[in-house]
Picture 1 (cartoon, rainbow, N blue to C red):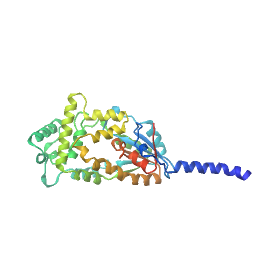
Picture 2 (picture 1 turned 90 degrees about the vertical axis):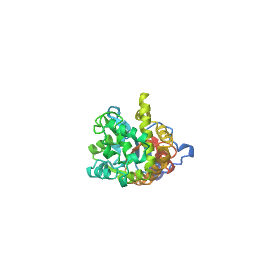
Picture 3 (picture 1 turned 30 degrees about the horizontal axis):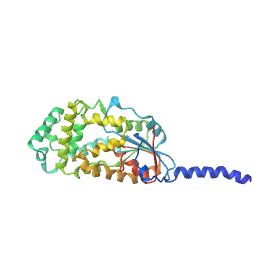
Picture 4 (picture 1 turned 180 degrees about the vertical axis):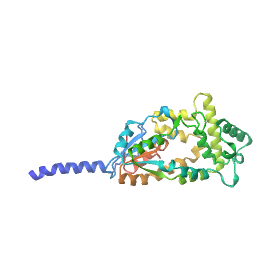
Amino acid sequence: MKNILLLLPIAWLLSCKSTQTAAVAYTPDQLLPTEKSVVWKITGNGLKKPSYLYGTIHMIPKDQYEMPDAIREALDNTKRVTFEIDMKEMTNLMTQMGLMTKAFMPGGKTIKDLLSPEDYTFVKGKMAEKGLPSGMMERMKPLFLSTLFSGDEGGGSPTDNSAITSVEMELYKSTKTRRLETAGLETTSYQMSIFDSIPYQAQAKMLVDGLRASETDSIGGENQLDQLLKLYHAQDINAMQAMISDEGEGMAAYEEILLKKRNRNWIAPMGRMMREKPTLFAVGAGHLGGTGGVVALLRKEGYRVEAAQ
């Protein structure tokens, strides 16, 4: 009897461990996340310790950013922070110089070759407004040029980003302070290859559509960044994903390349990293929601993924 009593606590502990690390069987209707959160805790499916998922936004006014308490807790409990691209690579001067060499269209092609005279005049005018040197910028791949325009949504010179930051950069500062390991799910070369997988003509249309939409929205007092920030502060990851899908013939037409395929590609390396050590993953919040989002894909693989507030 004493031996049985001695074994009972051990059996109980083993049972708890089994429950905590076992794969979770979600029903199909449970895969889609319904909670509004940009921070998620990942357990089960063989994980000895929790890992975390943080939906970021690549551009946010500094006065609107505040690190969630759940992320501070996650940083205390993880050994590595993994970004879409390792921030060590992104902040490296040699990497940045290499990116610039890949940002231009080959064969001397320019934006003028891709646009109607009316649209070209419109884009060139926008370059002048933002202080972008048209001679060099006109040779850039339109999607790359779009990111430069987007980076100036907060106003001021594109080279003066004192009022704008990114969630990734703020998080990276914390990883350096804590001396945490960093990693990436993709390389800069891969992300640049995504630009080349979309025809330049289609990229040019996205550029013009985006600039015209921002101009129209600004007249109404709210541009696309304002709309996106509202959804981000509301932590509505499904609405953010839907916003991408609703962009008509532009970005939405390439959602498979820009979003869904990348989400699927991330799941295997995420699983490997989580088994190696507790990891905090920081990826764009638009990647989290929807049936093809990272939360649903992780749940489909048997992980328990719960909103962390």
